[in-house]
Image (cartoon, rainbow, N blue to C red; front, side, top):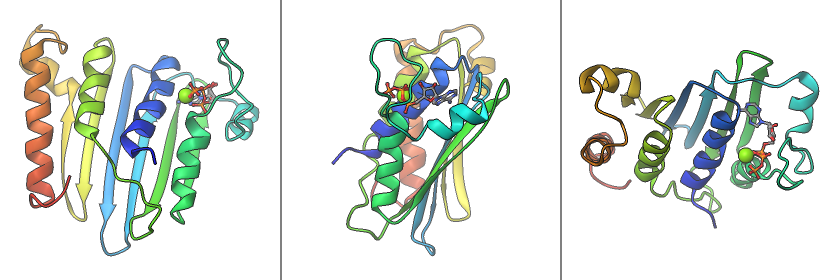
Length: 184
Ligand SMILES: Nc1ncnc2c1ncn2[C@@H]1O[C@H](COP(=O)(O)OP(=O)(O)OP(=O)(O)O)[C@@H](O)[C@H]1O
Ligand SMILES: [Mg+2]
């Protein structure tokens, strides 16, 4: 079983490949509905209707290194295995939003895994892009925005080890407060 953080990494990498300057990642849990929703949005090149139709087919890809694109089909499978679903909205020249709903009570619900590392790796390896990471639980939540961080850092790169460590600590701390220190 793959951890969902790896799916998040895959989907965010699609946004980077699409030339997005801003990538949003949101994990929102609704305990009453027993649902966890992962949404990745970007302002990249987007897709035509034709591309969008084909995108859930693993034999469709604009990759040149190999013929099969698996990022989206795997994410879709992981969601559907729990009784959830995946939806993609995209407009050519505007951007793409991929959203997957997971039923958390399902025995096929895969753990999120190390989202903190996924987010900090994405940020520190792509300092030319902005990221907004949001985590919600019912009515509460927190966010980490590189747009805001950049203002505070006044030119210190987001890849600086101290900055990366601060981001990790911040996400871990806020996640623990949000989830009541029970699980990740
Ligand atoms: N955010 C996005 N913006 C624009 N096009 C996208 C986006 N996400 C996916 N696509 C298009 O859909 C195709 C399929 O994506 P998918 O992640 O399934 O496979 P891949 O990225 O091609 O290969 P892999 O993920 O296996 O490395 C991509 O090649 C790309 O053309
Ligand atoms: Mg991909």
